[in-house]
Length: 288
Ligand code: NAD
Image (cartoon, rainbow, N blue to C red; front, top):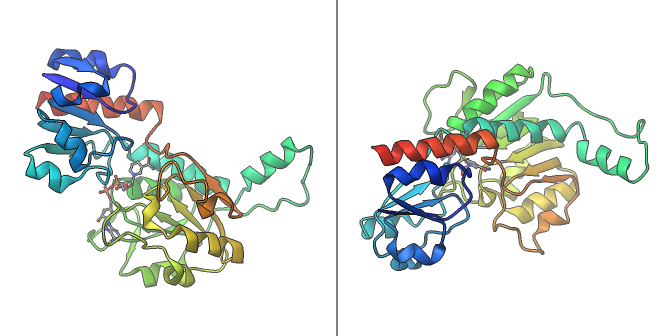
């Protein structure tokens, strides 16, 4: 069996996989591979699969399957699986880092220090204590964020039409109920027809004036132009995001020139510990 590692995994993984067969990182060997390991970089389109004539299994190290054409895989008899639980803590910690960085104005404080300015009087911070966090989606990651936010003394609400009960958040029935109450809104939904453009001009208008938005879900869950406009008008006090409508973002992406943003290059799952956990889940999948 030939296992093709397409994207960045922990460097220890190839050795752990050799007992299952030959392991290669050479993309030219796609036509011979029976198993392909991908993260979010490789786009497993119908054309990509057409080249992968022997492929039986795609393992997505991570959660989102939106880079895999699942219909095309099914039609070709290729099984596609992910590692659903591994990344929750890694993404939740990045979400907390972003949620702490925004009201503490860390980017501005750091940049001004580098510019030789000491803005002790000018930089006003706010606290998370007593604020309301509105989670959109309370699956594995949303739950881990809720637990951490509660430890900071936040009230945590969540909107998730597919979840009937939660131990970590107060469930609300609609976005319309969630958004006007939240000082912070954080997105933890997969990209689907339903969630595409979920945060747009209309839903942004339901949010509190001066609220913060955090997105470690998927870039296309927001209409980036509308978010940029909300930042310019002050409707949003800040937008921290790890994900973009196209990655890397196009040079003209409106977020790159909008004020009060905090941008990271899709590193939510990329903690050292998580890459090891993902590798362990990949091994378990191959053992089954
Ligand atoms: P999960 O499947 O455990 O949870 C997703 C939740 O979203 C589910 O509870 C589901 O019911 C809910 N949901 C679906 N449609 C919804 C809708 N229309 N409105 C509200 N809720 C809805 O997945 P997870 O592990 O928590 O991951 C969530 C997403 O985070 C992934 O799909 C992926 O897109 C993203 N992610 C990003 C990174 C990163 O590096 N930034 C890493 C991992 C995952």
